Length: 191
Image (cartoon, rainbow, N blue to C red; front, side):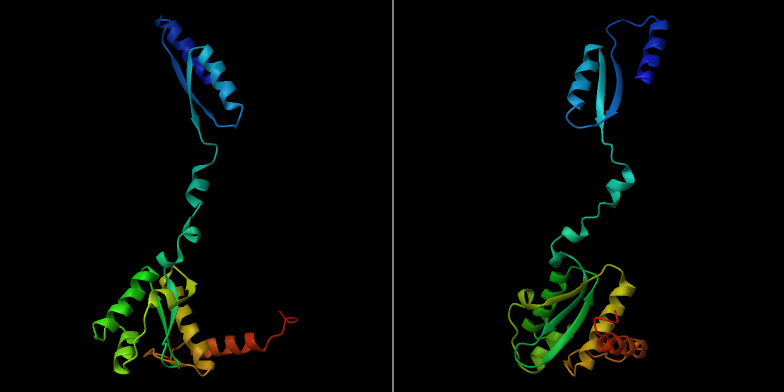
């Protein structure tokens, strides 16, 4: 109000026409905002409404978790329907895009994906992979995603699961072995 009053005084000093309108903005306060706007309108003051939420808070309202999981990226698992083989993969693209590539590799009988190669070599037809794959972790950060993939592979290796993955030995394996043994040996009282 003070700002608008000062602006009004300055224009009166310049002998501006009395029909001139003055502008300003107020923060939206809920049900009382309409009453305030009516009062300003009576005094020939046009007022806009602005959000009270700071810009940083608006930006930080990340909607990633509310997006469809198929449209995110991270680490996933594919199990062969015909044998006990498993593939652990990571992708920086949408899960659904990567899974469709595995399906296409199988259909086109090429070796563009290890899962597709396994299916073709053993004549295993895995249908509807887009409905059967499992998301293990949603992760946008590439380094974290690669480490998570390694950890999942090592977990399955420890569980004596047969893996389709070509690389199952990692520099970080000793550390992951220690972590997985320590965490599996803990009971609820030690956590």
